[in-house]
Amino acid sequence: MKLERLNYNKIRIFLTFDDLYEHGLTVDDIKRNELKVHAKIQRMVESACDEINFQMKGAIEIEIYSLHTQGLMMIITRDEEIFLLDDEWFNLQVTMEEQLQILYKFQSFEDLIQLCKILDRLQVVQTSSVFYYNDFYYLSIERIVNKQYDNVISLAAEYGSISTLTVHQLLEYGKSIVHQQAITKIASEFI
Image 1: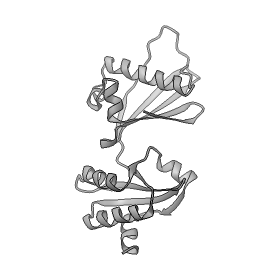
Image 2 (image 1 turned 180 degrees about the vertical axis):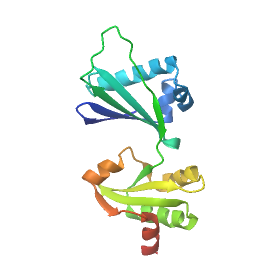
Image 3 (image 1 turned 90 degrees about the vertical axis):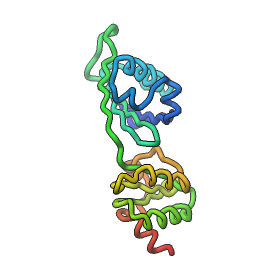
């Protein structure tokens, strides 16, 4: 489980499938949105909040995004304007959305070039961008055609590793190297 404070009233939790398994959960359990799942999610969130000193007072909103073969991302937002009574049950609204954008990081530009050449030949990615941040190159992949999502992730995992950053963070703190059609442009420029 990776924790990150986004601002004073919002944190992000990245959970791998192993993390879910350790807590006795699966993605299907969360999609069913049952009361026993709410209790397990509440314990996970409370533990995470304690770990990074994020007080859970007021109303808490939890958004859960499925990252396909990577795990889940939870965004926890605290609304301090709404106060709950001490004996009131933790009210959890589970919203499962699929994150169709994937972000991989690469230690070397050469690894990124090799992946781009393969993906360009397969012609399965319609939109992609490349960023540079903290000595890593990042490839953002969107709009994968013909339900080739798992194949693209498998190939990307051979050359890089999954990133828990967001494109918004890279746009704000990193440097945009190639904005659109990055895979095609890199594959054609570096023969």
